[in-house]
View 1 (tube, rainbow, N blue to C red):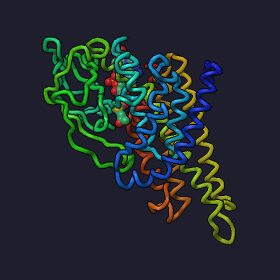
View 2: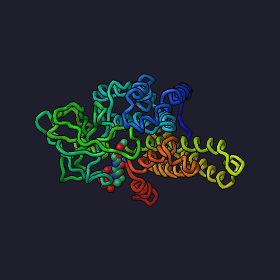
View 3: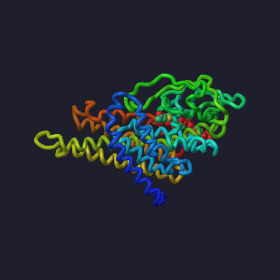
Length: 384
Ligand code: CAA
């Protein structure tokens, strides 16, 4: 494992951030989690709380208002997700939509957008997926045509997380469809740009407090200086973004797993059956031990991946896929076992583990399915 290259200041800052986050989660997030899930309403108050406590730009470079630490960022997402996966997603999507600017923005674009994204004055989102290009992301149909000092975008993006509550949306569109992935370009759209419209709202199994919408680009006209990088660099920007955002999903998954494990462990100590606490049943001890072992293993992979993002190693594609695959699968398994350990109560909405199980599922799907993560991993293992 690589040792993080961290100054005492960063270590101290992380300690303080995590103390604050634990307190906010206990006092403000955990008590709201069930209601957010039941109502499906975006928790704007928690978004404001995160902004006020400087939690929206933690991995951003310090010069743009962040802490410059992916490791701290994943730990924060994990803490929030222990109680509420939807709320953790607010922080993770802000990173997802800011990364293309961090990766490919001009100095002017960075100076213009990143400080406002770090404070939450602007919220952002990321639009790559289309109805016929999910896993096969390069196969997109959305186009961007240069028209003088503007681009005009046409097409429909689907499953776009939090765009309905965002000011910005990073849109990937083809400026030259004949070139496939090499014809894709990345743009910063503003959600009030002419021709930028929200389409259908999706109704989801989990993460129900985060709005998911279609985005319809209907002759959406934007200034040409909103292009990120050069024409044709968009697919590389999209992929490089996912390399560093997948650890955020992994952190969300890990937090869900830990939350479910903690709840199930305390339930086993309290629930009496056959004259003794369930925790005294060896068969259940073995289940809990496996859940714990898997969760800890997932955590080590995640922290390693985040450390590599911080160090800027050249293998973050591989590590991002490894940690997302492991953490997502662990979240699904641990939450399913937690429901099982609670028996009938686990299946009821009165207890949080059924919500955690529903929330866990998406971590095996978005930001690249587990099958895509395996493709990415195998390309490295076997040599592309
Ligand atoms: N970094 C930089 N460049 C990369 C790259 C990376 N990680 N991965 C690929 N590229 C480059 C390649 O080098 C290649 O360029 P060259 O030809 O010049 O070498 C080009 O991009 C095309 O790459 P591939 O040939 O590997 O492309 P592919 O079509 O085989 O696809 C894939 C690769 C890994 C399957 C990719 O399509 C993929 O990751 N798919 C999943 C998409 C995904 O994760 N979507 C998530 C949507 S966002 C979301 O879910 C957010 C949310 O809701 C919160």
